[in-house]
Image 1: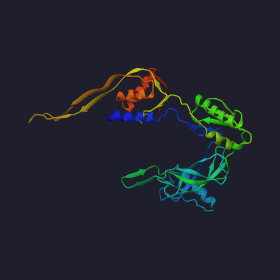
Image 2: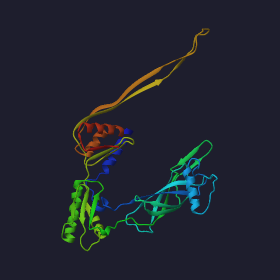
Image 3: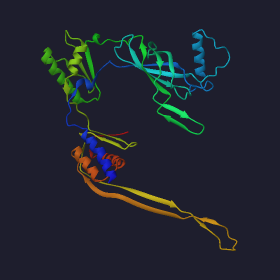
Image 4: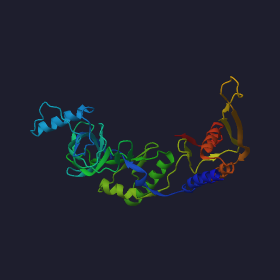
Length: 368
């Protein structure tokens, strides 16, 4: 009964989350081609750790970086070896948003690349962040915010989250803006988040209906199942134009698809999934092998020896196996049919794969 209830809950939740036709705004399902974040990365040092940094014997690059930093500051470290655990070498990553100007602040993520135990309490020294073209776009520095912690004793250790990774909110200042300007473009190329031919036509028609009303001509043209080209009208900036068409509501279409995750037992069934009438039997065979060895003692005054006699019990049980007919012209019928079989999520995944192999599911089955 518990297995049936768990299965029913999983599938009914999927059913409840699939509205028949949900109207969404265009700006929620498209992006403008070329308007995107840019990845930045840099190498730096975190100082101020409480003996939880890199061991310089195992992380020689940390010692080299320390010497180079001290030399730039006019402090000679000499030839003697440095013995400190208060410094850690890290990689600093960030995303440079589109259209951000010099002087803006962005968040950064700091991750240890040595054998540091924790970055708690550390401070990142000024670190240049490079783009894919090799140019410096930002410089990061500041106190780290670490969500995890680690504590250890002689015979026990406890770790929560990841203490070797941290963030610095607004920890980098932009030095150079990313190239590109939205207003330099004469047309906008809108790209769908989930490519679909029907959705492209729907979005194109809604945009053309809007432009015909306000500008007296059709300005949108579908290019393929992913992108739409929209020409900018005279006297309107791209920013204002996209703000206007982005608020238009459409009813996006989605392909019939079933997504299953065998690791977690998750099953997600789209509302447009259809299934032909099939007969299904599903059961589990459980084989139990129990070893119960017995000690055999020799007779009194005999010259025998104590021995261990093996004793094995083997039991086999097969549950389920009832033959059921599933008639699934709709998602609700499919869910009710699978619930009537009393299958667990793992069993449902096996059933769906078998039905797909039989050619009775008219949808795409995605196994993760």
